[in-house]
Length: 139
Image (cartoon, rainbow, N blue to C red):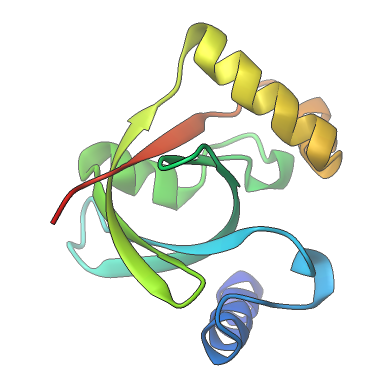
């Protein structure tokens, strides 16, 4: 298992054991577990990530810590935009869409202000970091 997969597994276990709360780099930060379906494999993938609450919808950020390529989960949700997310002790259904224009800039600016590490990620890469809106899907 790769170091990233092992790290993700530990964060996921801690998240689920503590109703969405974790320590370390994510201590006190809003964290969710995003469930996507692999674009090629069709298998479920789970990735922990910070989010921004938009009052119903939530935003997540395809930063990949400033790597030059988008994260795999972003490719997966573009192919299969119906996703679920564990937030706290709840699992909710969402439909993902990519924010553009003023909507993206407003959300991205707030994220960088609230969590300056995201500005560091932006400085490390030439790509525009995608902001993904997860719109709730009524059951």
